[in-house]
Length: 492
Image (cartoon, rainbow, N blue to C red; front, side, top):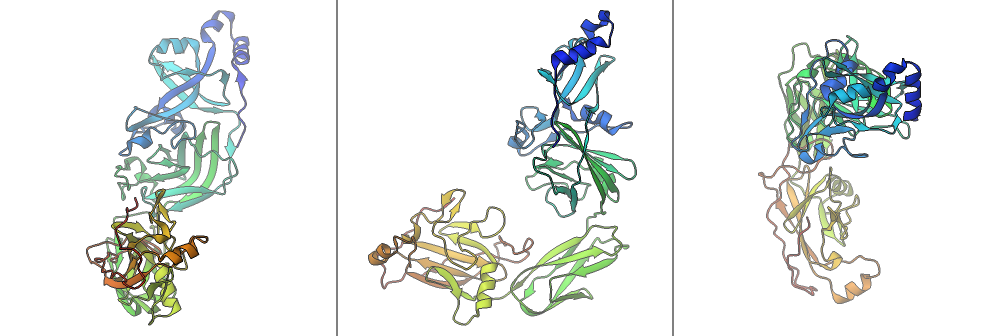
């Protein structure tokens, strides 16, 4: 990004003094520093005439609000020492006389040794501080890809800026969306500015996953508008991105598709709250046909599938739903340290089970097998990893030589695979010590899933089917077992 040119305080003062009468020079000397500027004051001059209040952000995740140091999540923001982000810490230029007049109400002024390239000028009007727009001698324009998502947990919309050059500053002090109808929308940290992304609610999704309530009243006008320009305010000044991005209208409607049996069949679609002028265009996975309120399919494998509804006129946002096709056939067994096809199954059926692994329960601890924070206990070929970890803690406390009970669940399969892994024979342990692998004594059983437990994994989108696990029904192997099975310390 652009370099930060600095002017020494002495040089800046010399330039300032040369332009004013000597009698005024002493009291009007400009000084540079940083101030903690409330959002409303920070954005007032940026938004122009008619700019209203820009609220502080109160967070249910209090520790995040405090992360405002260099390199931290909300660098450049400032807070109340607890759960509220109040505004932006930004460089300013102010006359010594005005700074003195502010006294202790100086917005936490901290003097800088040099004049930064970008800053806000502070003046007093009726004793109250007025902040200018950012003074930036070399504003930058960045040719970035603007990617809009209408399916985000952080609100109704999310903008991600792609094709960023190396060193691009994503620790925005502020961000403004400017629309084709001449309006401007100010964005704040945490609720709107997050790891270089910009998200907001326009009143449909009003709570994010951590329980934070989303402010939306100021952003309802963005629905149905076209964002022409995104202005990013960094510590080095302005970076402007051309957007030309339409914000499709969202509404409190829903589509659903019922779960059904895998193979060949149909499942029904239900709709609620869809506007009358929504021009419906349905689509699903390859090999699926959607018409007359039904999804038809042939030879479909068990698993989770997505249904998409688009507006042919482009006015409204897309909608989506997921549904699960299920089977009571269990196509895998456990042998030689991995999941392999069952005697009455094909390689393709076994591979599909492994692809759709949802959870693995070891002892009493259940681990997600897919998604964020997943524990990779079985690899893509079905081989078990006795060195697997979850949150930096070993799942198998005694490695390959331990005794464990596992319950393996996969999306679309109504039965789980229950595995009892026994101790190692002494000669087996010795023979495998150089490779780190062992062939434990095992027995396997199948158990129907409990209907009271919800799905924990996904191949595409969140599940609507059950993936609960039944009671473990492992049978201890008598032949060749060298140790009595015991429950081991569970992983975190």
